[in-house]
Image (cartoon, rainbow, N blue to C red; front, side, top):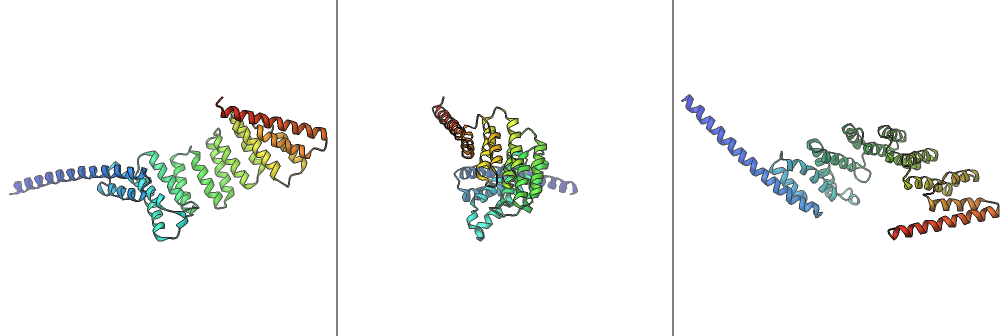
Length: 304
């Protein structure tokens, strides 16, 4: 009897295993079909029905590759359904809550680095000013992203923005400087620094940043154009500058690539000039630069 009982138990275990395997295969097939249908709806921007199908894919086979990937797109579907203009409405706010829940699951379970990165990025955005407006929740997520990829300067930029939005300007500047330490030859770092210093009204630091960028990209006209742009903007808009300071800014912005802005700078200089002959000379040069800039634009438009 004992031997027979063991045989029965063994047979039952085999039957159960086969049944579970069959159920698992059926669940995987269901998950794949629901995931495929969800993707079609998602691409058509039918986010409400896409969310339903992604949920079906997850329920059919929670551990399948399709289900794991579905968490991100489910979160993003709800994220797209959320409308900032309707913040405070229960049904609308629920969409954002569900988006955050699924982004978090995706960030934990996803094995594909690209999807995991997207989940973390969108999770940070969900805590941004136009959504939950909770930088304390966003900060640890960005720090985690930095740990995953210490050389990705986008993470430093994101954390600097969180600090700046919260009014922690010293921390924001320190984070941008850390980005520079991580990638000292990346032009985007100096663009971020320039933008930060412009917002804070620190012109000398702003110019230092854009000039460093121009040194990194000596053959990029846009880099030099940016220097001239900032000089022109400061000379034109800063009413606290005296004539000597304006003249200094004008002379410092002498870049061939910045024809248009150089012409504007010359006109500013001409307006300050007391010598009529010199004034006429400056205006003539400004007009020549303008004509040259127009000719170049026409040439580019013609595809030459």
